[in-house]
Each structure stands twice: as C-alpha cells, then as structure tokens.
Length: 608
Image (tube, rainbow, N blue to C red; front, side):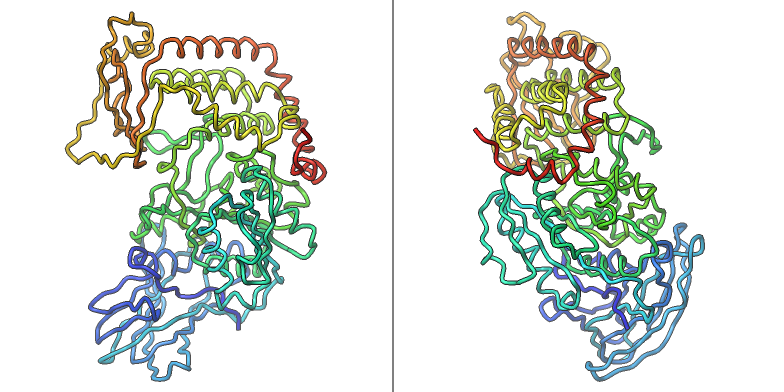
C-alpha cells in the first residue's frame, strides 16, 4: 500500500479554510493535530489542499484507484462528493464507520477515478454520529505499483536569510512521511553566512557560493547535484517561502506514478492574504484586456488564476480548467534530469526572468507539459509588497535577451515599450528608474560579451548604487494607510494633454512650479490609482505604493530629466544601426551560456 498524500490539518487558524471547514461546534487542537467533535458536528475537506483533483491525476499519472485510511474514534458518516467545473455536485459514496482504537485505521474506498470531461474535484465530508468523536489523521493510499523510483535533489538559493532557509529545511527533514523518500537538500549560500553545522541532517549539503544572484545560485546547486549522478528529478525552491512539507511528498507521488515527463510549476499563495492564489503558472508576452481576454503583447506577462479566493469552492472548481502554461517561477519549479540533459542549464541572468526563459525551453522540449498541479503551492511574499528599485534593470535587460533568444524581438515594439517606460518614470519624477531602464537597454546592446566581460557580483553592486544615484528621491518608513473614504483623483483630457506635453511640468518655466507636494496613491489595481497628472506644476510627488510601509518622495529636477532624455535619444540612434545584429548575437550565444563549461568559468571569481 502506497501513501499518495495526507488529509492535512492546518497549523494555524489563518490557513484553516485551505485545509478543512467545520460545521457545528468542533474544535481544532493545533498542538496535538486533532479535531474534537460532538454529535452532528461535521468536518468538510472541500478545500484547496485536501481535494483530489481527478483530471490531473488521470491525465498525468497512472493513478485511478484510491482509498482513504482514517484515524478516528467514534461513529461517523463518511461521504465522498465530486464537483465539476460548472459547480455541479455529485454524491459518489456514503458509508457509516465506527472505531474506538486509534491504533487501527478505518478504510473508505473511492470509485475508480474518471478522466475528462467527466472528471472533477473529489472531497470527503465526515459527520460525527456518536456523542463524542475524534479525528486525528487521514491518508490517501493506493495498491497500484509505482512506475519508477524517484531521487530528488531539492535546490534552494539563499542570501543572508538564515532564519527563512533553516525553517524551510527543517520542515522537510523533520517530516516523518518523507523519511522513506530519497532526497537531498542543496542549500546554496550566496551570502556565505551559514555553516554546515546549522543543519543537523546528513541529507542537507551546504554549498558556499559567490553572490551571483538567484540564477547563479540555483545553477550552482544544480551542477553540484548533477555531479552526484544519482538524481532523477530536481526542484528549485526559493529560500523565503512558507512551506507545508506535504507538497514535497505530493511531488514524489506525481513523479513516481507519472505517465510521461512533465515539469511542475508550484503555485504561489499570497503570504499576507493566505487564502489568495497569486499565480498558478504564467504566460509569456501576453496580457489580459478589460474583458479578461488574453492577447499577445511583448514585454508583458499574465499570472494565471490570479487573485482566486481559495476559500471559495467555486474558485477551486475553476482550477480544474487547465491552462497552457509557458513557465513556472523558481519559488517552486520541478523537472527531470532528462530535461536538463536536453536543454542545458539556466541563463546567467543574476536575477529576474531566469525562470521565465528556462521555462520556455522546458515547454519547447516537453511539447507543453508544464503543470500547475492544484494543491502544489507555497506561500511567498507578493510582488506588490516589494520595491527594491534595482530589480527594474534585470527585468528589462533580461526580458530583452529572452525575446532575442526566443524570436520575439521586434525593434519598434521594444522601442515603444522602453520609451514609454522612460517617459512614464519622468512623469513621476522617478529619475532613478528612468535611468535604470536606459542602462538596461545599453547593456543589452553591448551584446553577449557584456555577460562574459563583467563580473556579476561587481555589476550588481554597481547597479544597486546606480538605482539610487539621484538624490532628489527619498524613501521614508511610514504607517500611512488610506481609509475607505479616500477619493482617487482622475484628471480631464485637457489637463492630461497639457501634463504630457510639458512632461508633467518639466518644460514649464521655474516660476510656474509651485513649492508644493502632490500625494499619489499607487495601489496594485490600476483602476484605483490616482492620475500621475495630479502632480502637474508641483515641486514634489509623495507616493504611497501598494501596501509597502514606506512613503516615496520624488522632487522635480529639470536638469536630470533633460540629461535622461538626451541619454535615451543617443541609445535610440545607436539601436537603429545595431538591433538586428545584436539580437542575432544573443540568440547564437544561448547554447554557450547554458553549457556546463561556461558556468564552471562564470561561477569563479574574476581576476582583478
């Protein structure tokens, strides 16, 4: 009998709706991991983590015979339901069970799983019939034989986040059910602040590394694992995630019973809104219009199943509709050794877009199968809560390289997007960001030799300084929260036109600039943002960005704006002559940059 997954109980109250729902007056003992029930109380596993997503199992694995082993005491009615994409609910089995000995399991067999279009989402509901009852644990098991043994290399890259990474490592190594699985954790320490003695488990290997970013760290760990020659699969996993180790166990089961080779893109749940799905895989060079239609658009990405409320059963049913995923992010991305043997290593991007580009190659080789298997997910800090500034450089430079390699590099489209980014940031008096986009563009135009000739660690230090070079911009910690009565400011067409024609006041004579500040609310939802033209003829912009506990103040600087515009025009002129040749160079360099030989040299410190 093989355990496929467990009926997980929540560790904290704020995540409980993702594991179970209670009716009546039952209570969860979080410390003892049990649910205490009384007569008529009900536990429903109609939840994100504890549902069986039938169509995914039947499409990607040989699994179709399941039964539950339940550890409980008392008398209960156990019922299994199937819900489909259209929210149709079907009773598939009901049975009365009774048990008084926790050393024994009660078994509850399910009918054979169905394939699409009849497949759905299956879950249990358990109602207490006795005066008192206790639910301790449950497992989903099968008698089917595995297709293969899996030996998993789990690779995480960290930079001075000791508390995060040790918590993640401990969650995996202390999981009892994982003790019988073959795996090893490679902790790549880009900050060199950890010691091997920080990890009291022989299955953890600490790999000191230079700070060559996430792509360099993940690749260093992958090379270490490949050299062992024993691993069938690899998992890239961020260091600062909040992980339920059950997802690692589910990952093993999917690969052990897999019909074919496929990569798994773990979903990202919002760390600050625990029940909200931020992304379940993503699309490359696409955008979503106001009607929700996905359309082609260079330099854009679409996070799939974005903002789904996983406490809602209809949202869970929508997960049954599988997307044609282009890539999965490296907060949790698993793939086989066969994939690496055929597509090579990630590109030396330092950070940002490395997972996107790697995913595009994975998808091309596997002829699509990147799977966002529902319930394979981690919590991660959402992007709307971050604003480091320097990351804009890597986003732009690496997207340009990716477009060049994968044949999406159109001159006028690139010029339009970059010009728009530069102008938009000038309108916000954000000279640092405007400059960083031009720097990214110029470094792309320098061609592949730029990567070969520049030490990534030194370059990153320079980029961080460059992103703060304009002293007219400051950031101040603040607990300012806008109340529900705050009114968003939109402007009319005339003011908008005048603002654009004068670059939001940059082209006005100095006596027309008021020594005042315009407050701009800049949340992640575009429709709820203030118009940036609100700042027209003001000296300063004070900006509240998303939920970041900081106020950003940008002060108008006409000289800086003109200098940036001049630099941009020079880049545009240079681009006209070099565009086709530079794109060809990046495309031709891809094989070299993804080779073991290149990376072995790249990871070494450069000679001064």
